[in-house]
Length: 486
Image 1 (tube, one colour):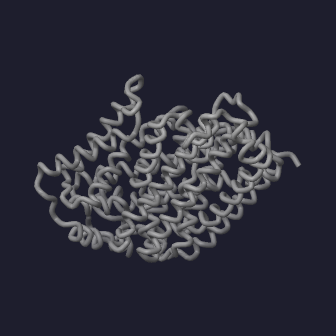
Image 2 (cartoon, helix red, strand yellow):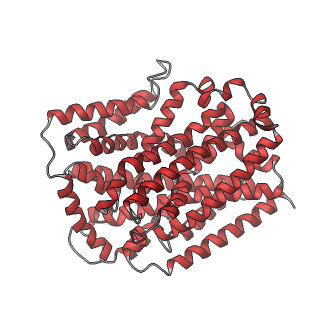
Image 3 (cartoon, rainbow, N blue to C red):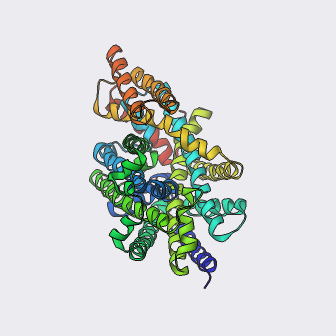
């Protein structure tokens, strides 16, 4: 059987299975809180699979494997950063489950006395960030489909968006979490088989090591990529995990605080272990072909040129499942932010029918992301490069606010300004000291600025508990579907 035919059969079977399962779960959703939060009743084991899948998207599958092709074990730094960040979220923030928050912005509001300037900045930034990442995931899935099926790119973009929307929209978070659990099983199984095949055909660990440059096998590839670049990559990805509303949404929807913590830690460990798979896959592609013009094409080249048809189909389905899982989380987080924050910000009141409003918002989100993907060109590269500038600032104020009660909203605002400024300065620091040209510096600058300004300004009022109680009363309007002014 030709590879293209096997892949087509695998993708069709996968799409039908996921869409049918999502439609089945949609029949079990009747209230807004079921749709947005899964009834806050997910067991930890189902969240482990869902959070794991949400970590392994376009960036890890395409970007990290390409980095491994070019710099060996440096590619593993990408998932290691995400895995560490996910575990840190579980350890440091699982306690937020007891406050029954719906969005990360509610948590930020509680740290800073419900300051409107900080809260609305968080609302808008996180909402548009999810739309941008949804676009990236759709384009990543479409690029893979185009490469393995040879269909027109625009058709692949629409197909990727329609399948993702068909999984996420009918049942909301329940669809996302339970289908992601299945997709994680597919993803890990596919890459386990690929890793075994790579090691077997390259002569095992020793054979693979001998077939790539010596620097590739240095600790995290620092001899090839540079120690400060590796450190900066890990810090930047940890920050993106800490400021990710999808991870918070999974914790807030857990059955218990303990379950939320356990799910995040174990998912983080699984992603860190998966980093070895990324490194091996990228280096195996280099072993077979050292002349790829674009390292990001290494996994696709490997699938189409070096694997038997059945394994190629299995791996492609695994990759697509990982990308769609990430897209699902971006979509549902955007919908939650819309109905909880963006709609009342624009209209001055909450939606009378929040369940309908969030479904319409999700449809619009997919339409917008698909249109952007169809005309993106280099825009996605711009998004991937510059979006972390804003998210790193949010990560700083979240960490400082969580562990330093003296932090003020003025300090948070100063950090939100200082961190992207420092990030831009770092971007243009090429040719200067290598330490200055990485993501560690903006994070440190933001933290220092926030601490200094907080010490110079009066303590924040009201308290965390008072704000959390106010937000709980507001949130009941959305969760119960009643009407009230904001």
